[in-house]
Amino acid sequence: MPELPEVEAVAQSLRPLVEGRKIRCVHVLHPIATKPQAPAKLAHATEGQQIRAVRRKGKYLWLELATGIVTLHFKLDGQLLWFSGAKELFAKANKLKPENGVHVDVAFELDKGVLGFADGRHFGRVLAWDSEPSCPAIAGLGIDAISPGFTTPQFTKLLAASKRPIKEFLLDQSKVAGVGNIYSCESLWHAKLNPRRRANSLTAAESGKLHKAIVSVLARALECCLHPAPDFRDPEWWFQGLEEILRVYDREGKPCRRCGHPVKRSTQGVRATYFCAHCQK
Ligand SMILES: [Zn+2]
Image: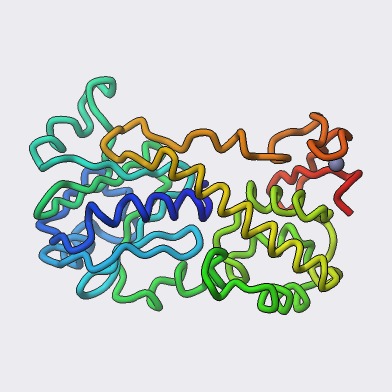
């Protein structure tokens, strides 16, 4: 599932394409992508409206319309596609022989270009809401991890109020929004903290170190996601080079890049945690 840096890179690449554009009409090619809403609801809520802005908070991305919003939930591997116009969309979308075309679930035909949403596994969703507060997923988010509001004092306060293991605390999007499984493992490794430590057991110095680690891990990943930036014209585009910046994630049994002891894998909640038991205390 894309975490904050991936979604931020998508938002930055999307803005110049759609901001200020008008939605002429909506094509729902696979109605599962708007569930539980009816495709007609999405069309009714968006057609004829101007896209005022592309917004992101945590791992969520949405289009702010003159009235209401449209959320784009990528889930595991949903992605955006760009077509020059409706002609190109229908020439390419969902051909009987998949090798000749691309999968598109929902397409917004704009006054210039077409924005497509695709998720071949159909976990992703495109949904219309009256406002940000009326969308429970957005309303429930905590502080965005790359926003100015994510400060050391604020983070320390949140940690002090939680008895949960720090790894689980970091995955709780209602506290800090945007950090998922990969970047929480990475941040804890950089801060030399054991993922099972209770959030409220961290000293002020440790909280500060973890805050710094999260900020720098996300900044580095965002840099990586923007070079090269997402290219929605290429149906095969995906983020490249992220594995190379990872220090501990998915490295079970391999030597820790700091102390050489083997990286351990354990399960916390339902997620895999990677850490070095020797240098993460
Ligand atoms: Zn180590």
